[in-house]
Length: 346
Ligand code: NAP
Ligand code: ZN
Image 1 (cartoon, rainbow, N blue to C red):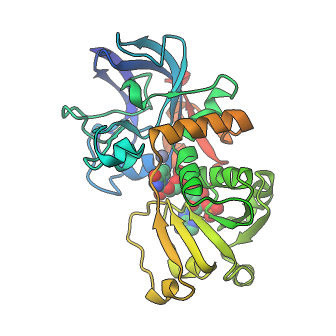
Image 2: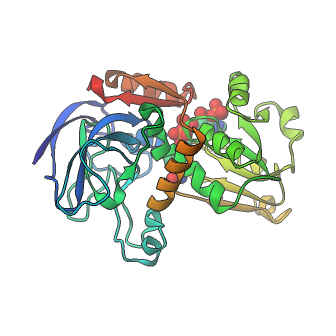
């Protein structure tokens, strides 16, 4: 077994603290990565607090992982020691169902194996990226370009693919008016991709203070959602809304901002169900949809796209001992736009 160091939550009531555990040995199809950086996703906070469902504890969060390959199994073809590599939200899936065969491992009909807070296919708990090392089967390891700054690449593994995938699926681009609702880790990547794909991008935010920053990210317009006049001015105007909000919000209000045939794509995962008035959907034949991360091939496509167009996340690098304080800031929407843990501080 491989000795690993990490920060873990022992229960939903306790803060993260140093913890040591064992990873499996590197099997013939496995890649071992020395983790250099791990992004901090709002999903980490939802899960260590048991906000979605009862979790697997102790829990080592983290699914925006980048680092260097240190060891590969005998049958591994795509990676060798010294390569830069990444791991996102999944570390396994059945590989044979129709969704896996279509490159939609995130929708594996048996359920994918999540990078943490899950049991692997042999029943062993999975532990995430707030750790010095991880062992993952080759098919779920991504190639990372040395053209991009490594720490700012980490958030692409979740925030990046979670916004890239739906924008590609719904073919959002030139001639479309796209609103990005919530300017946090996911939202700021949604802005960057929306702009890169040629859409006219509006940020809908509760934080008036983010206006200049939104424009710096490339957004064409900015609407403060607490100002009824500003909201009224954009009613019925968007082809798509990419909803990245982490807390329950007024869905009827945001659906009313869609034009006829418009689609609200939900990627946020608040802890309570939404309520939606039927009229909010049938008026103007509007749709409400959802999207979860992205498949492995599409994640590689997104990383390659980012390397080609020089797209990374805007990050604040943190010391792992500041993780609890960083969660508190994230809850207040006070992060520009992703915390990334420097694993050298572990
Ligand atoms: P984040 O960095 O905390 O950003 C969320 C943003 O939502 C905040 O910055 C804030 O933006 C806005 N917001 C927060 N509370 C709000 C409220 N009560 N009303 C309106 N707006 C509010 O979080 P994140 O890491 O981007 O994650 C966002 C959500 O996506 C989380 O629920 C996460 O679990 C989920 N997620 C889903 C997937 C998927 O596969 N679908 C993948 C990753 C994450 P403003 O200050 O601009 O208002
Ligand atoms: Zn995430």
